[in-house]
Image (cartoon, rainbow, N blue to C red; front, side):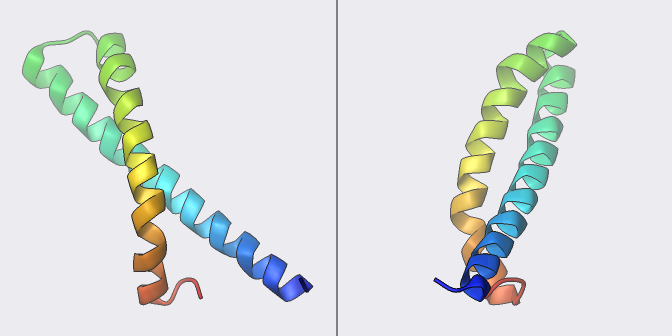
Length: 77
């Protein structure tokens, strides 16, 4: 493997990973906040029991789906 392929792979992993972590965090925070308001939950309960599991699920889904979307958008090759 040459350096260009290694750098391209590292760039792809960095872009997909950072976008996946950011968007998963935002969506999990919004859903946990809405559940906190709707069900009158404590802040710690909402974040620990709803926010963290949703973050993990969203992260897995985003990592699986984002690479195809970002490739189509031209951000990664």
